[in-house]
Each structure stands twice: as C-alpha cells, then as structure tokens.
Length: 132
Length: 132
Image (cartoon, rainbow over all chains, first blue to last red; front, top):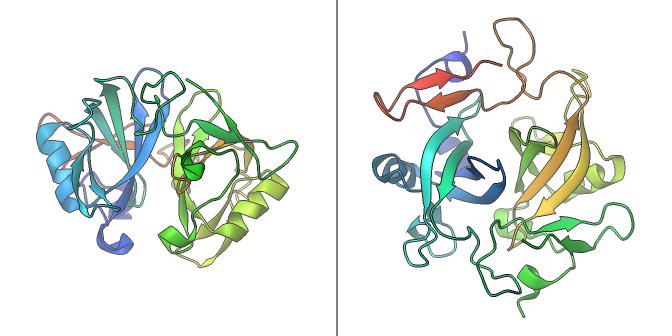
C-alpha cells in the first residue's frame, strides 16, 4: 500500500515544493473557486488552530490571515488533501463580501479572484470579464 | 489602471513562479475540484490548441496530456485566470471515469484527487476518506 495515497495519516509534502503548497479556496455552498494561495507549515497550522484561511504571502514574505484588515475573512469548514499530499483545498464560508483584493466597477471587493475567462473561440490572447 | 488585474490581455506570469503556474481543474457540472497540476507555457499552449487538459509533469519532467494512456481525458470548456495572472482554472468535462491515478476499493479510478478530508474536530493529524 502507498501510505501517502491510501493512508489516513496527514503527511503534507512541504519539502517537495520548497516549503510551500498551493491551496485552493472553494466556497462551501456555491462551490465557486475564490482564490489560490500558498501555505507553509506555519500557515497551515495557524489555519487549523484559528479555523480562518491563512497563507504564506509570497509577495510580502509573511504569514497572512485573509481578511484581517479588509474584514473579508474566510471561515474554514473543511480541509481536503490530494493523493500525493502536496495540494490542499480550504472549503470556506465567506464572512465579508469578497475574496479578492481587486474591486468591481461598483467599488466592492470581487467575490472571486478568477473574474476573467479566456476567449477560447476567437482571439486567444483575449480575456473576458465575468463581473460579479 | 493595473493592466495585469483590470486589463483584457492575457499575460500569464510564468517567470514569477519559475516557469510553472498552478492549474486547478474543476468539473463544469458538479463544480467539484478534480485535481491540481502545473502548466508551463508549452503545456498551456497545447491545452489551448487541443482543448484537452495538458500539464507539465513535475515528477517526470515532461509534457503530460491527462488521460492519453488511461482514457480519462479532460475536455477543457473554459479557462479562467486570476487577478495577478499567476494561477489558472481549467473547467472541464470528464470523458472517462475519473481524474485521479489512484483507484477506489471498487478498482476504478477515483473521480477526484481530493478524496480525503481532514478530521477537524478530533485528531488533527487524521484523514478521512470521502469515497466516490
């Protein structure tokens, strides 16, 4: 048996990815993907402790609990781990309005960071906004 | 205006992440997250060309169109890009049974690589299987 794949012991493979694993954030009801961040061991443990989605900011190089300044915190209700234990899903409830630091035309935080899709039929370098 | 965030021109930031961007694969109908892979520029362009989910395999160091050997190909129906253009979603239709290389007790490929969740209430190092 491959313990990493078939075992029931958490053994996240931080070393395999230079200390940082990608974390997909999915909203529990809509199943919408809100953002993608990274967690090191410290960020993951802080998430477990606080139950608030916490990441390692790769731009600021610091522990980052989403929404602590904006109020758009993400309450973690479930955590999933993939087959080779090097990717994570935080399933969350939104406590504020959005999950993205960008703002829509209405001036409010966008619900998801994935607010643009590609135009797959015509010009392939073109993005279309999915406004929310 | 921040062009990367508010523009409609695709400008994926491969260099920022050493040439590889994380790709979340989401099933179009169920909105279930099936797997997380990585794409370099070549893999992304092959996905655009073929409309089949293609990645850069970080274990085998080669271009990898999911399902070419197993038959579990993933037809890409939509591609989303995040605010800072360093994370991607492939929204797909499954053409085979599953998306994971692991097998359930029934001997069939698991639907999603995220078939385990953490036990958040009791023993925190423990994983529970979500069998599909």
